[in-house]
Image (cartoon, rainbow, N blue to C red; front, side):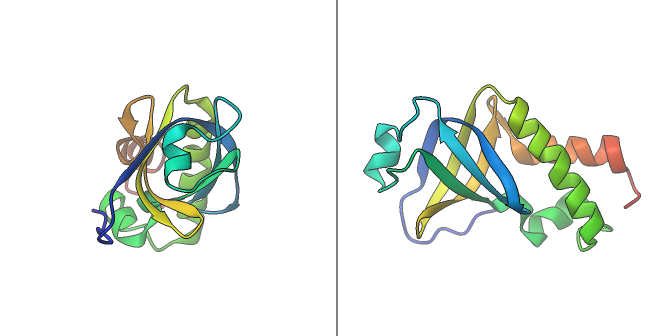
Length: 131
């Protein structure tokens, strides 16, 4: 699902919700300790917040979740609002991905469950076959 950029995949855990209001598919996450953990520092992330671009919100993945609605902005916004609530509620957040400039691009796991599975559940419960 995620293109390997020829680099090493990074796994950073110990994260909590900070802000996901800037744009759909991008979140700022805080480190539970209040500062970057050792794994984050190893990859050059030193700030207390980590910006993550979620691969789950790329069109090809959204198409797999709902092939009728993936290109409709209102559906994306509604799905994003539900996802942000799940991120806020999560006790444990991990990101698996790659360093992209000063941010991570990857997949989220909330309480050990892949975000993509949660998105499919949200889609079937909230939207079904409608947009």
